Length: 202
Image (cartoon, rainbow, N blue to C red; front, side):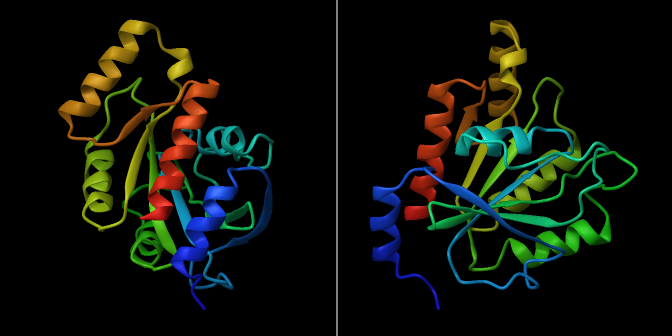
């Protein structure tokens, strides 16, 4: 049974990434035994820094990246504040294990994104390198899904001021909206947390 929206908003207002626990890994959203708490889908290219961002948001090392890029093929569910899930999706990209065009990844996204369980989406991009056509196409797909979408630029802590400016300029030129630059700082973390909670309240 779906959690009533008024109850959800009340719980989100009282809690803010205070506790987290790993629940399970699942090969697809339909194989997850849903309790209808809302989910925040975390997606991005392999090695983009999803595990680092998740660990930073919850203040502990609970998500781990594979030693081989693209090796992970399951959805990982982390329950935050007993209120919502961070759903860590496999990375896509040019690796031996996963590409955006693979049947497995495409099928996973086509099932998961429209699901009412997924309330909003966080797309991670590393703009130290110009996004490829697959990144832009995937962004357009997510943008057209009708779900609230946040773009987080990762690894900004490795960029100098000029490089950050260029990354933000590139994101605007490509039409990426609602962009936050993640540099590992408390300010950036709070901005991302606030944006996620705002999307969940919609």
